[in-house]
Every structure is written in structure tokens, then in C-alpha cells.
Length: 189
Image: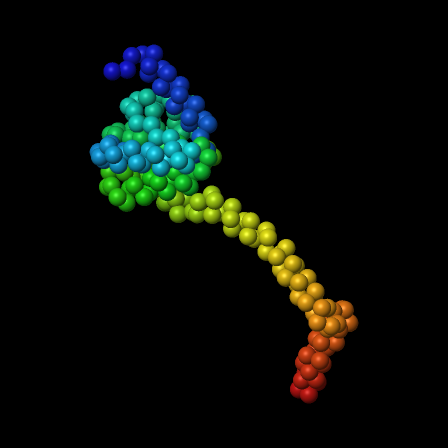
């Protein structure tokens, strides 16, 4: 049993986590085998997250005056709060994956950057690529123009080494016959 001081410390800790988290998700971990529960918690910890299971009244007291007050008011039955301090999609993905394996684990609601999320929105968030995959895609997109320029410069260097002309006039004369044919076809019509 928790004494009053322990409860106050727990409520204060939960309030700090609610205010400091990038995202939070209301779910449940009660009813799954302990080894599996530990595995889910580990996956969430690896994504810079945290899972807390406690009494609903303590969740309600901790949420008082925060954006999560509406979600955590009047809870009935077993619940857990999953906090994402860095990578919200990774925490949502860990919960969604665990929910596929265990019927007890279900996403009941959440918040991302203070905005309320529906269950469908949480599932969409869980389907996003990981942070590393997103950064890789962004980097590839940013490098594409530079890579294309480098390839073009290499082709020009190869043409120059082969003795071909690489001046803009040579490029224009190569394109001119195609334009002339198109102009001739239009005038014949």
C-alpha cells in the first residue's frame, strides 16, 4: 500500500511526465504475462518512452489542470499511460504491435504535442516510418540535386576528355534539329 507521501510523489512525477512528454497514450498492460509486459516496456524505453501503471484516481489527480485532464477523467478498469519523450511514432508502434499479439492491450486515446488524438490517428502515427528512416529519406531528398549536378559535371568531363565539344553552342545545335522538325510538322498542318 502506498502512503500519502508516496502517492503525492507519484502524482507529482506523473504530472511532470504529462507536461514533459511529446506524446502520451492511454492503454492497458494488465492481464498479459509478465515477461511480455517487460518486453513491451523495454521496447518503449528504447524509444525514449516510459510506461506507468497505477490507480486511475492517481492518473486523474496528476492530469488535473493539464491538457490530458479530459482523457484521464473518470477512468474505469485497468489502465496504463505510455509517454513518448522523443520518438512518438516508435512508442505508438510498440503499443500497436503488442496489441496485435495481446487482445488486452488496446489504444484508447492519446495526445501528440498537446493535441488530442483519436484511436485511428494513433494507429496512423504508429504506421509512420521510424525517425531514422524519415531522416534517411530527407537526407536522400536533399542530396539528390547535388548528386545530379555531380553526375552532369562528370559527364561533361568525360566528353571533354574524349575530345567532344562541351560548349553551350554545341548543346544548342544538337537540340536545334529536333526543334526544327517539330516546327516543320506544325507548318505542314
